[in-house]
Length: 294
Image (spheres, rainbow, N blue to C red):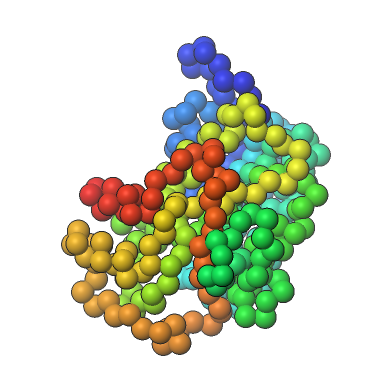
């Protein structure tokens, strides 16, 4: 594990460096701080942690964290289609930069957690486990470039003792612009697929339990599908949102061919049995009702 839990009041559990002062980084920063960790969060505009020398000298060596959590990367605005026209930037931010960070952490004896993506699988032949070879990554001509970079990072760090946490379609409140709920509320045309999703408060609890668990090992690459059980199809989710008065009266369900997208999209369900052994997450319907209740 990273450190022993202490019974002494106000004892700092771990010294954590979070890279990426964005949506997920801020949720983790707030939660882990409350749990008793000393957390430093950075945006690349504050300090260029993508520069290998700066990362080593000013952060890993000088700040000397116990653990680095990488929440940064290329996601695309307004969506992953942007990666198709900015491939060099997407590759650098999703593969090159986090990989060099993972290598530096190994060299310095620091633990490293990478917030990855489950958008490297598609179709409903099965619930995909952490051991399944991605079918929507580097070797699929229909996959998005974004998905290819997520698969590439996993392959290129297979020799490193890191934790990769795969998430999908993050859910928080309707006021968060990056929340899946606020995103679909803005759309008028929806497609009806069943996809795993991640309730970000559950992600935060999972990370805290992982790093404070005395049985956690940091010897090999280790991957977790951190998604909530019993994922809903889009029509069911929209029905629940409408029942709380939080839907969009202009919603219309159409075939995916009617949606103006450039890159292929991942549609799948991830198996979360491994992650549930660390944190017993509630069903998607339960957390959706909680969020919409305010």
